Length: 276
Image (cartoon, rainbow, N blue to C red):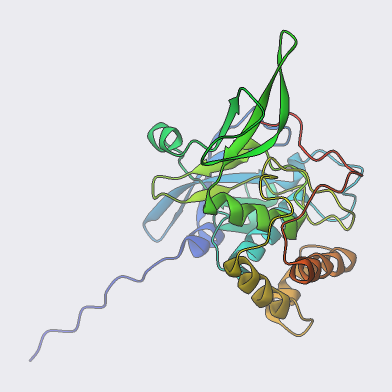
């Protein structure tokens, strides 16, 4: 009689782990303006670190009266996945110890990787220098200014396109995480998807330049996926308002029409404060 066939262990996706695992709060990240809890999540013997942001800990915002910041964070993840770039860590909406909230995989940004992947800098003079893109002049105290620059990096360039799509109102330097695997992730996407133009970012270095063919192809796929009969549109309808979905479609269409990176509108501060 032959031995029974061994069934290999099932591969658990990060999304499934976050959605089904048991959350245990380990601490609070106190620098945040809303409640941000550092947790571990465990399911079927697999565990990982994550961030849990309960809706009950959100501060109300006058210009985001509908929905929750947690829902917008999940919507940003859905858009990143639809574009095929994986720029936002796996993120789900789920119940937790303090009620419904956003749960996102923790990305460890090591000091070694952060030093290797220098993304932002302040330089003297009016030109950014090779490998850098200018953002604007910054006050550095004692009646001095310096030129704020970001790296001329294709990973950041994809994030600049994503931010234009989701209408990110708060892309700060601290929201850019260079991971040990060489990828750059963007986090903190609660202030997104407003129907009005709210784009504020440090990634203006490509403003007005032609979009890459890779970006245009990702935008074409996204435009098709945002049609009313597609699963992505149905998923977004659970997270943001109909007016915000219409505005999202219009932003994608405008990027495809112009074929260029967004430029500051002049009607809203272009750079978030504080920038880092």
